[in-house]
Length: 477
Image 1 (tube, helix red, strand yellow):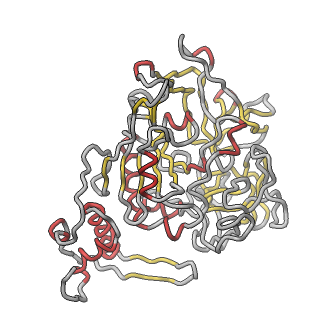
Image 2 (tube, rainbow, N blue to C red):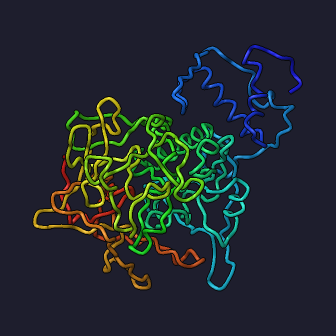
Image 3 (cartoon, rainbow, N blue to C red):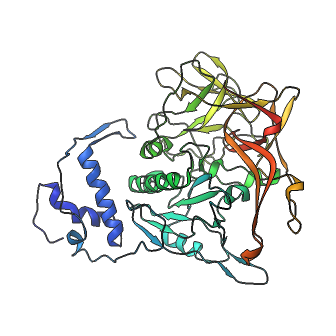
């Protein structure tokens, strides 16, 4: 910066801003403001090697901040005009195209009128599996798909592409698309230390808090979804569903930043648990980060592995929807749960806890000194009296009679899973049977079809699912 050396961190604001790697003033300033907020508050962390790192708080630190401090930095000036972002983040408008490009073809999202037409119930956390410039090229391609926001790894800068009122094509499940906002985070799930930066976590959390307040979205794992928890719509689509942001996304830290920390809310023998391992100390073995079958580098994780009995020598839990034997592959979701997810307790044995999962009793090690889950309050559903089992769905669509003339009725197709008599699953709440009809470029034909059938969203396996309200009874475990 051409300034004299100084031992006073207040003099370093502009240098810290440039250290972000941002190419625009607003991103660099937002990054520097975050850094100085941490310095003022202090912080403690445990490294992957188990070492404690502490930064003493300096509450009175007041750097010379703002545009004047960055005048000599030579960064471009970006505008937040047109964006739907909180003032606490750096944000710019880079629109995804809504345009025709062929005979009946258009892209890459649908115009809507949310939340007036239908509620926004979910926020879906993705990672891009690509780098920033390529991602921006893709979202501006009308022949590709779309999402509402992209977040840059280096500094947490946000680009908005689709308005919240409109429906982006991001989740691989049209029902979820119709009621969600998609956030793509720059990075690769197998390389978290390079890509999942603190700046991006903090920027993302501020955006999600803003959106959750604006659209009344609960801050829990059945409404703040990972792309890896979005269900397949039919049996055929299950194997191809996405697995990001993966086992190395730090959900516990993310929810702390959201101001909704994951904690015990019930006594030790509660009928519901919230998965909550210590991220840095929890290091399950994964394979396939570099080459198929080869072990990934040892790393903290949000994931907890599930077994068919109370022993690590027992087989891993199997997901019949995937049609293959379970593995420890980093993209194999068959036999693992994730931090923040809630499940009904099925059994206990010493340091082991069993939960109802994919229609089975699934076990995980849960010692008192280093728990992988904490007792919680929750509401569960179970098959109503007289039913031995009920089907599970990947989308909550209306009954056939609800569709008006000119709108083809969508099949209510069950997945290959069932909830058996006596089993319980935590519910994220009741939702209507709903379908957003939007198959043409002309939005005049778009409409929301809503039926009389109601559903409950449940945490069924690693992914969520839906059961018909008429099939189940709601209870407190």
